[in-house]
Length: 310
Image 1 (spheres, rainbow, N blue to C red):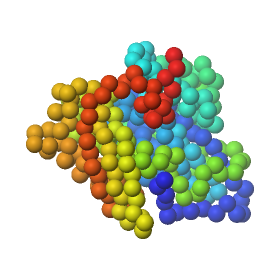
Image 2 (cartoon, rainbow, N blue to C red; image 1 turned 90 degrees about the vertical axis):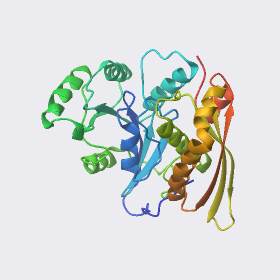
Image 3 (cartoon, rainbow, N blue to C red; image 1 turned 135 degrees about the horizontal axis):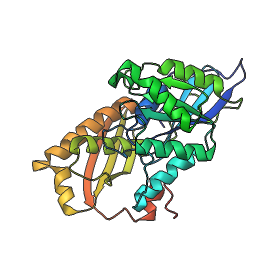
């Protein structure tokens, strides 16, 4: 499990702790915001919609308060495939289990049909919710107020924050307010832990991110990555990671490999650089590409923490 060097002592002020779920339409910037609030990369980010598949908990310490941020898949209407249904179910489960929900709204897109559907769903669940207008750096300054008014007509929010997750604008104020809003509780995770994902799972997510960034729209988002072997040296300074990138067809395998293996090499280099920063060790990463129809395999969903029940 990756850890940080910063710690907070539970002695002194009484501790508090709570779960904060992000909810919003795909590509609203939830994962980027999570990473900024945690201060480390714990959830992958790509321009591709529906990149986040599983619920990921990012952990942040603010004084004697432990904030447990739950990054959820983007919620979209009318999911048809098993993977889509499982992702939407995971998102709503994260919302239902949280102490507080942050509805993240992309300022540049506004309350489009997808965002409005999520907002109406939140209203039906009667959850404690705050509004976060994100990507404010991409629009004119007068764009926020009409969005705030429009959103509050559908669901009255306790608090509203205007932020840019990529630049960090407004994020410190949001973090401080969240710490004050959490209920008294013992911490649920060690104070130096950053995520609930194992290093094996996080390594697979990092590589999946690099696949998406390299391939853009050449492959469907249904591609997946699994860590088959994770071996750490006794001194912890070197790690060997063997991973398999699963695609659905032979034609997709050729795309991932690239001419002369150039593309898989680029994916590996980019993933290895991120992993070495996260794990603070030299990483030896070995990637393999295999064809397998996995989208209807319950075992694959369990490995991703997704429920396939209908």
